[in-house]
Image (cartoon, rainbow, N blue to C red; front, side, top):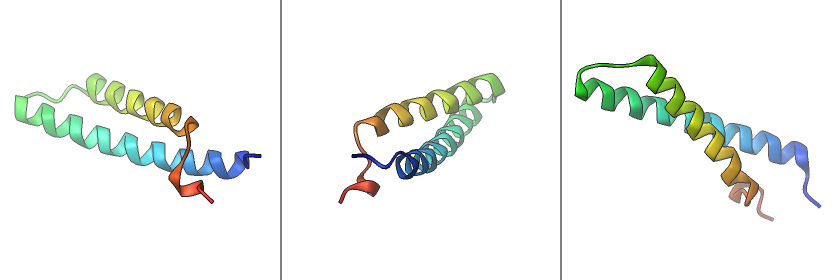
Length: 65
């Protein structure tokens, strides 16, 4: 049986890191192209976070026993 509190914490930490990484990547890419659009950065980061949570449903290596 899965410990949902541990899973939620681990998935949240992983998703937060993924959101930050996606935001940095989007800002870096937009800077190279010459224009940083906040809507694009936020939507990219949010989508990355959602995908991270969905991927975590398959399993988290942090919780492997």
